[in-house]
Image 1 (tube, rainbow, N blue to C red):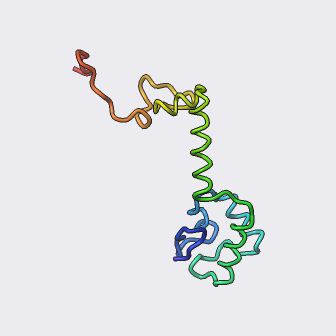
Image 2 (cartoon, rainbow, N blue to C red):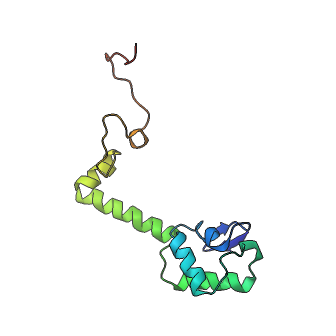
Image 3 (cartoon, one colour):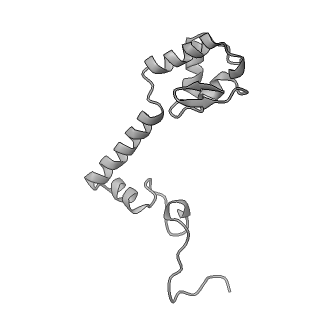
Length: 126
C-alpha cells in the first residue's frame, strides 16, 4: 500500500479513486491533481512508480489543500465557534439535534440516538 499524507491508499484502485481515501480530497480534486501532473487516470496505484508517488505527495503538500488533521481541526473549531456564540446552529450542535432544519417529531434518530420510553405513554400499534 502506498502512503500519501499519512494515509494508506489502496493499490488496486485507480489513482484518482485512491486519492479520495485522503480526507479533504474528493473526486474533482483528485482528477485535477492527475491532470496537472499528467498522470494517466486509468493507471492503478500499485502500478505507479516511486517518482509518480513523490510527485503526488509534493503536489498535495505544496498545493494548498486542507487535508486530514488540519481539515478535521478546522471543522471542529468552526463547530466550537458556533457553540460559543450560542447561535441557533450552535445550540442545535450542543443539544445533539439536527442542525439544518430537518423535522424532529418522527425522524432524526441518528442525531437523537435510540428512542427513550416515556413513563405512562402507551405504545402505538396495538
